[in-house]
Image (tube, rainbow, N blue to C red; front, side, top):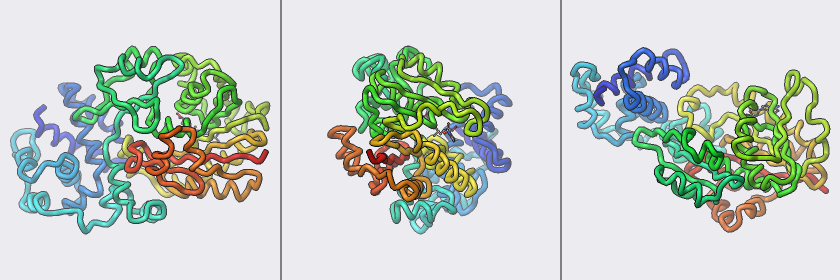
Length: 437
Ligand SMILES: C[S@@+](CC[C@H](N)C(=O)[O-])C[C@H]1O[C@@H](n2cnc3c(N)ncnc32)[C@H](O)[C@@H]1O
């Protein structure tokens, strides 16, 4: 496919995503099936055009003064790809398979329009209904935070110290030119290619041997800041596919006991194979029986015994919009309300496991106070025997780098918020509470 044909295809795919409110991945797969002649390079280029358009949907619409699929793609070519009106005009030459030539109005917008007077939700490319919530957290900085969330994300790896050290993992992956993470001593970072695509890491021998895991540096930091001690009793209550579980097991150096639970059996399923690959021997998976919370209490014997309970709470995922650019436009206020209810319930369910003097780590990949400091405050109001460990002490788990992390992150009395703009990671909130001894 020519570059111009790819742009026509991107306009067609964006139209289908917006008209039918369908996930981008689904529409792109369907397009691939219907266009067998398109090679993998074409499909990668198309998917990056489409995702980049979704990243900058609001700002592109503002720039072009209309929200048609064509306007969104053209606006993105300027805002996301840095092409000028002339270069975009050359791509829209009206030839076979190319988009129609630019109208005078389009050429004028591409030449002269700016985002200077645009409201924050447009400059930050996020849904307008979230503006008040983001203003409460970031104030005037919300547009800049949103813009950083609209950028592409790198591929982050965590070196699994149960199988390798950083130097060895680096050496095994040197053909992918990994660089060290900024904060986590175990993080390696691989830049995406020009199409924003990461290399097929899961086929790499280093991955197959369990030497590295795919995990955003922010998620790695959340595990480190939870500071699971070697030999401790730890419950990972929302373990999902086991991203945090595996990081905790390695931090505990395979000593002590780590219990992994999730009330969704399907989400938990991949954890078994991942534990094997990682060589983690201190993990006991507790699968829900019956219907999750309402079924058999498979955690009963852990009551009052845990040194650390980690809640990686279900949340809106606003901190992961870089990886999920269409999710931000599909998110609805009802989803936020639902997640807040889940979070309060999980916090209530978790406290019974924390032994006197034990800790409760509350983590989300959300940026919103409603899901973060709001939940922590409400929990502390309900449970006078818990208090927050101040972030200044929490970051000690990271050694010297902790001081810089605290400066970079958004610090609240209840916890630390990492964001793409501040820490170059996905957005993560980490709060550590302790139960009176
Ligand atoms: C953010 S995800 C966890 C991701 C995982 N910890 C990781 O690092 O890969 C949140 C998880 O919470 C689970 N969950 C939701 N409600 C729950 C509940 N009441 N009890 C336990 N797990 C729950 C969901 O099934 C989901 O897997």
